[in-house]
Length: 130
Image (cartoon, rainbow, N blue to C red; front, side):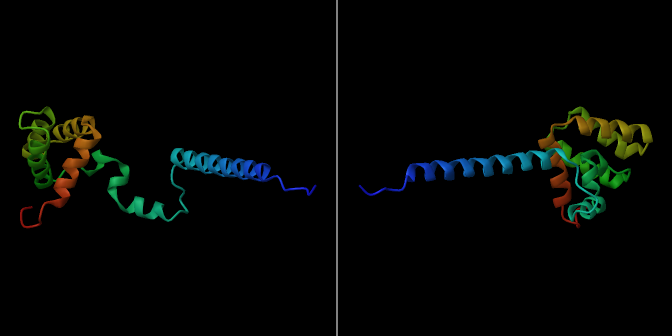
């Protein structure tokens, strides 16, 4: 009788190796997800150049024109009588530091989807309308 190779063992070994590689990939992905970007990485200089890396509240400047534009967008996204919309309108009109801080705090309390929508619409506003 001729000795046949045991293909089942080879297949099982290939499956074990594949599972081990998958586990290593998932572990590395989880590590990257929980680590801040390194200073030496390519993404770090871009993140430092953009104010969006500090969070959505960092984009709320003290510029009254920008605040008025954001108030118009928030009126569309959240509604005319929403507390955040009212606070941003008031901050745009008064340019008072306390009003601006209150508007920033309320903006940060919005859901991430509403924040993203408002900032996207402000960024997409044609320069002629600004």
